[in-house]
Length: 167
Image (tube, rainbow, N blue to C red):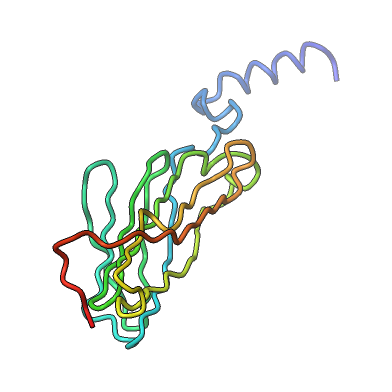
């Protein structure tokens, strides 16, 4: 091909009606994608009619419905911290902190983030007047690789006074 023909072909390509952004490389996927959680609950009586799952995010409180089998789903925005509180009559409530910062970091963050976990509620009658000192677990993401990072504690303290004891 001669140089004049190449220059003419290039000029025709550049003056085509396609918008300029179509020629540019594709944009990176959005960084602020949601993190999906699926929780499975276990209680002694295997009924979940009176079970509540409260989700606190950025000062707002929402409730996640619980299925007949104890399953609940929560969708959290990226770059937030949430507190999930699970309650069932006759059982000690449990709280789990979920931090979605760094959910998009590293190779793992390129995929849809969906975490499945279980919450086993302990009957109050087995706890001898004790209650949990704070959240029993934390779910987060490693800032360098985006891998799921889990911490847990079941530290108990004497229950607050004024709360009725169950025998």
